Length: 282
Image (cartoon, rainbow, N blue to C red; front, side, top):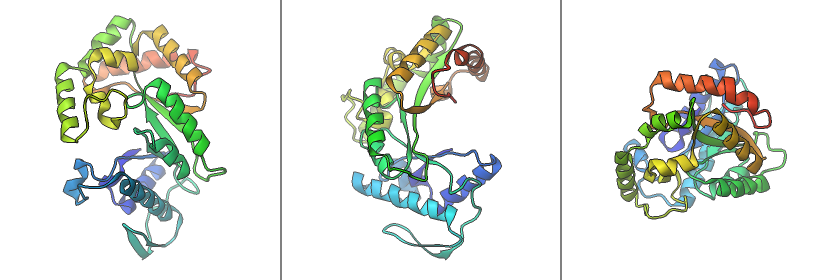
């Protein structure tokens, strides 16, 4: 379950996640992302001007409060941004001591930050190229808390599509990388005050929106069966501490459901059996 932390009160997030954990019989992972000060949070009453450190402080306090809601019969809490007095928060999750929590990491600093909070982390090729992800995962491992109660696993999300031929994979995925998308992405970054000329991936979550299809093909895995196997094996060799590879089959969701299902079938039947040395993909 992925959620934007600034768009939810911590108690609301805790009850939603606990409900999902009950419905899945204790199989939920919660991934939190987003930053305070982003335009999406302003209609909800969030401040529009928030410095990076304050945003991180809010994330840390929200996660602390969520964990208390899951583990305490009644929450007593006095923080800088939220407070509660003898408040019972229900339901409680199935997993003990609580649901595993990860942070979505786009910027460089988020990887060690997540580790120091005792959390897992999810990085993505859409905001960090391979050679930087290798460094980011090493920084995450070096900053982990010994014996943390929360699983501190490192995940990597990859945009992938497998077809019978490379040409077919490119023809279908090209729908998700149109020239108009590039123009819209540049306009979005300018509205956010981000310099679109930066090409070092430090632009974070929105950087991929400035890519054309040629750039997307270099970073993402859009290929036939053998090509996908080769790229995923290379990924595992470069990132041995990666716990799981999370696959996204349809960025921007323009490929038909039937084509996506066929790609998933090909992956399950022909790619996965060849990836015994690669962490489980989901």
